[in-house]
Image (tube, rainbow, N blue to C red):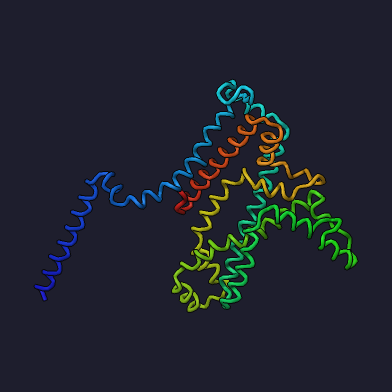
Length: 328
């Protein structure tokens, strides 16, 4: 037995030495060796890298318009540098303050409801035992994500319009008064939030259900032995199991607090509701495309991006202070 153990130890030692030698040789080999060995993989990698460079990084050169008094007649190079005057100009605009207020309010409310509902929905779907019923419900809930906001806006007006909406027609037939769901500011805000939850909650459950599938089943068995019911298992096993996923998605979502969906506002807005429809993306469109003031629109977009980056970094730092891994 001692000889067998000795031979096993020698074999293990030789194996470790060979592995260390192989790693040492790989470290000494240069970049061209790996390029020549795995050139197919690197070639495939060029496609997403090229797309990122062309569509993400190359347009950043246009951010210099935020520091110029851009005139189309003078061109990009001939326009005069004005430093931070464009930023001081947009900060003094009444529409800027209104856009900041509306953007923060809409996105914080949207984050409160649209971020939490997928978690609740995923917890409920995870408890369904019938596989067929679960698949049918998942398909129906995912469908709105694949519809454009133009289609969703058209459906919303067909259903919620005060004059000829199907829901208002039903309310009137039942003896009630027509409700201006999309023709009054407060009702429009509530409808905006509910439509957003309906559109996004099905798709958001995919990530959480995938995270739940990675939870060790033995934890549920131990909870059952301890006498835990469904609610206790969800609270003490499922939620802690997807906590890291929730924190990561929350950090990423905070980066959009100063942004918002331009298509969603445009699809649902109308002339009767103007109190909450002036947001930063809409203001960028009005100043840049409608008015042709590209310097002002670029400065506002740059301001929005910087604030979003700062919020993500702050949220990441707070998550790390609380013991989570964070993003960076």
